[in-house]
Length: 118
Length: 379
Image (cartoon, rainbow over the protein chains, first blue to last red):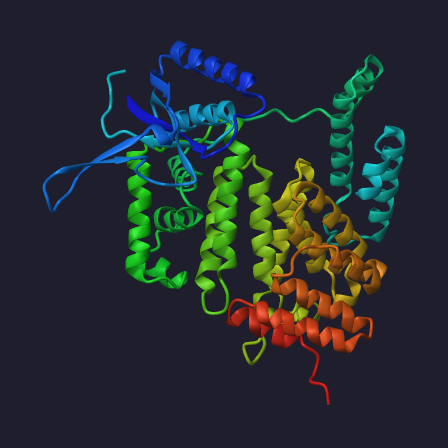
């Protein structure tokens, strides 16, 4: 069966929403449903982008450089991810719609190359 | 429609208003070749709104009234969508995960059978660009696993709306010199109507395209200029297409599940039924625009409605309504405004408005249309 990555895009520098309690309840409920439907592979929230570190190979020196901060400096960063199993994009998008409703922010739905056994 | 909405708090009053409207509409029509009447839709719309209002204010008394209202008209038995390979393919081509440009290209390629070169030419895009667009779309369908199927009933209305939008986009691209797109869109419309006989919006779209197509010869003048509806030689209209369009609109009325394409088709049908511009039943058209605005409340619909308001209530009233719209970037907004100003004798302001319209036109076809409408040069 196909796997999809659901990435939650969190705006930089915003205060937590007023209804954060309700939001956490909604996300917990969604995770319960994913588990019950055997669609849940993994999920987790990330610390803010300021806690990130980038490592990359410098072609010139052959050294690995270490940099403080996220790879992409942007108005949004990835706040969390789900990895789910779904038979097709429609099913993945249905979960994605639930996720964006629960988190109140945009969710990107992207397919993995590898499939997993049903 | 605005009147009906205001009085819907009292259902008896609304029904009386509807009955009155119906009687008036019926009196207007000649006995032969009766054009479609919007009265049934006025009733349906009024009733649906009454039901919605009752649901919101539910009390035991209201629930009784609601049940009584629903019993008055039984809903026809729902049938599932027709399953057919071509239908599965059309819905796949028009999946919301694909951009609209990709949807249009795929539909023309896979359903219409046009070559990549033909599609590229039709949309004035280099062939490699169109080829890449098609490859990306097909790759996405495969890699993201867009399913090859007719959407389930719950999703069908939104998904069908996307398909019809694509077909109508193709139809509207058939400006001067690209008439083959119009023919192709109508063909797609016929395929859809055959595959989905129970979907009235499909018939509505087909009717709209046929009626618009029926005026094509009259729409283009000797010098290639566009001639607007009021000035067209009606002898040049294709009567067979009009007859077919009218019959489809009648079928939609009998179905009594109105939607935006059906209402637009009915408006076009009222125009087609008039022997001359002066004989046009503008109150009927205005009533239809009220319905269209109710189910498709966009600024462009409101703009088109002001044209009908001008005929029924005069240009001053129409101008007041038009100036309340937020369409400064749209060339037709300024063109219609110019027309109204001219009719009110405000010629300087009319000339300024035409100028603004010309500045906002996107292409030669739009500019040519505006030039044709402009009054003769000032001395």
